Length: 317
Image (cartoon, rainbow, N blue to C red):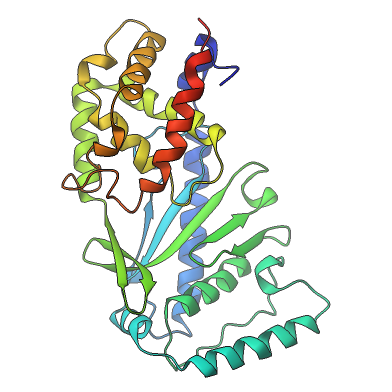
């Protein structure tokens, strides 16, 4: 990978956007709170007091950089929505509804709702028949747009909502929200009606990161920041947030490799260690009982990171 040098590694580690990141997070919290509060007025299954916004990105440990995405899981505690996700829906009815919606959309001059700017004309109407997670995502998209400026756009990408708002958040700020079912610490993603939900819990992550930080200190956070930036520039094709994968790699890295007067020296030692290790057998920071190869939330990033490692043979001193 060309352009990787001692100066670049050190500059990434020294970068401090904590004030900007904190301000942005407060805006996101306020935005989501307002949107969920609005939804709760028309959707009986949604309650602001039973909704949690969980940061998945570097806000979790303070390793934010200018390249960071603001990724969150928005968990709604609703047994009824969860049940509705697993109930059988008439296939022909769904096909008919999609056909009618596509026909109506083709008649509109404006872009489809998921690509439009926010508009107060998008009213949220409660559908009492099997209100599931897909419907919640769609309604949340509309509610979020009501609390953004006219220049902001909320894209519905199926499993997540992506917000682009130059005037609201800045030209390079990337915000991704994954609406999920929340149940006693678990964030549940619907795989399919037959397979049910995939669960992610952050209790182990919180505990293990704190444990590693207490042993190593700021060098651990700096290394997370450096690898995150390099990872994102190596590929834009990862599905889930790469943060959990990077944290898992560095948590499994021996503590003594972080030692050294210079960050760059420690970086070289860690890269060499990862390059000659079978990282797919490393333990997941989400669930130490699983290897990264078996951890659904991160295993798609193994190939991407291996490409990054193979490109680091052009590092300059």
